[in-house]
Amino acid sequence: MMNEALFFDTLRQGLWIAVMISAPMLAVALVAGVTIGLFQALTSVQEMTLTFVPKVGAMLVVFWVSMSFMSETLVSFFTTRIVPLIAGG
Image (cartoon, rainbow, N blue to C red):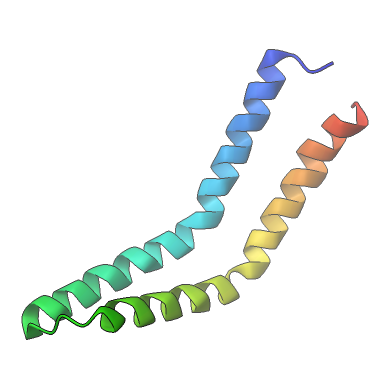
């Protein structure tokens, strides 16, 4: 049976892994958004696709590059933490 400390520690570790996995994509979205916003403010171009397309493109590239890191992190968390809990260890 799982006690409260083990439950909260597993939950804390899962939330931290979610933050680590999402950080690269969120950072790129932030940088791309600020850069495009600055460009739009300087040129007075208010085109919606100018904001959306480069940001999504940059996020897709970062997702493709960091996919192995994301997969390894999740697999490691599940094999070392979740699977033993399910198996009763």
